[in-house]
Image (tube, rainbow, N blue to C red; front, side, top):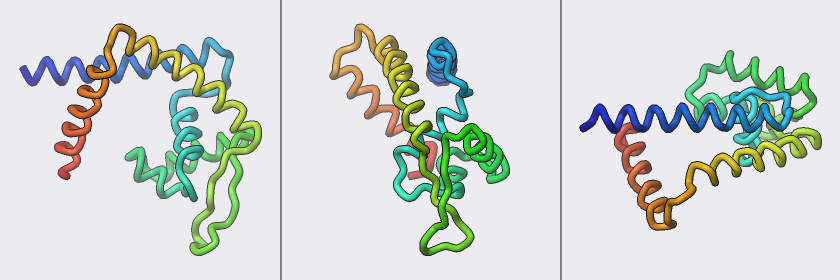
Length: 141
């Protein structure tokens, strides 16, 4: 039974990632999956820093630094000094980054709608409750 659960969750996560990647590509957006993920996290995280992104994603700081540099070079990200931590910078989306994320979110919502087609609100709520318990179990909460 556990093998079926692992495989199903693995395939679901993989297919969601592939579908989102195709939806972004089909709209001609100049992003890969990690770029879109970083922009989304920055957009939704108040007073966002590179350290927070590394912690949230489980990626090493060097990888996050490279991704942020790419996003900044693309004109999608701005940095400003952190008011209380001189070693840190606060990250925000530029105007271009905000506009691009509006399109990315539309693409991702379309994928989500496709994924949830035929499911009731109760089924979705149950799935969310169960997966949150599973995540908490794995994270040791």
